[in-house]
Image 1 (cartoon, rainbow, N blue to C red):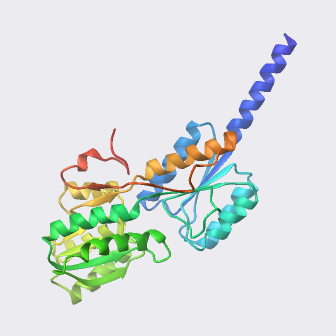
Image 2 (image 1 turned 135 degrees about the vertical axis):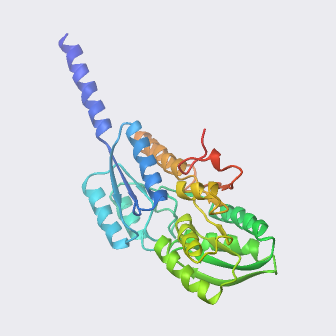
Length: 306
C-alpha cells in the first residue's frame, strides 16, 4: 500500500510539473483583431495541451519586446510564441532567448535571420497578395486610377504584399497608380491619408490596402466624401471586413489563417518541449484564401468554418 501511495504521489508530482510548464505568447496590440485572434488561438491550444500561459503585447515597440523577452526568460518559459516587432530589430531578442535555452516559434512575421528561431510560420503573403490583386484587377475592369496603402515599412509582410500587388497590377497598362503611401497598418492613419489623397485625386476608382485595418480606414474616408462606388480590397480576412463585404462596403479581402498558424506554432513548441523534436523546416508557410461576397459566409474568425 505504501509503495502504491508513493507511486501515486510521484505521478501527481510529475503531472504537476508538466502542467506547470509555461508558454509565453507575445504579439502586437490586441486592438487589431488579427493579433488578438492569433494570441487567443495560441493561448487556447497551449492550455488544451496542459500548459500555463502568459500572454503579452509589445505594441510594435522593439524595446518593449526586449523587456518582455527578459520577463519570459526570468519566468523560466519553456517556449515563446512570437509575432515580432520588426524583422531586424527582433533578432537580438530571439537570440537572447535561444542562448537561455528557450526556443522561439515565430508566427505571421519573419525575422531577417536563419537559425535563430526554432520556426518561422507565416501566411504565404506573396500568394495571397497575387490573389487579392487579381480580384482587384477584375473589379476595376482592368483600367482606372487607383491608390495603394502600404503597411509598416519595418514589417517584411508589408513589402511582400506590395510586391505581389504590383507584380500583378503592373501587367495592366490602363491601371494607373496615382498614390502609394504607408498608413502603418493603422485605421486612423489610413483615414487621414485617404482624405488627403482624395483632395489631389478625386477621380480614383479603387484602393488596394496592405491590411484590412487600413482598408476600413480608407473605406470610411471614402464614405465620408460620398464616394461609395470606389472599389476597396483589403488583406487579412478580419471579421469586420467580412461583415463589410456582406454589406457591400468593401469588395474583397485575402484571409490569412491566423488561428491555424498560432495553433500550429504551439503544436511544434509542444513537440520540442516533450521530446526535443525540432520542426523539419524553420521557414514554413500556409496559403491564403480570397474572400468575396460569393463565399463570405464560409469564413469565421481568421479561418474557414468547418
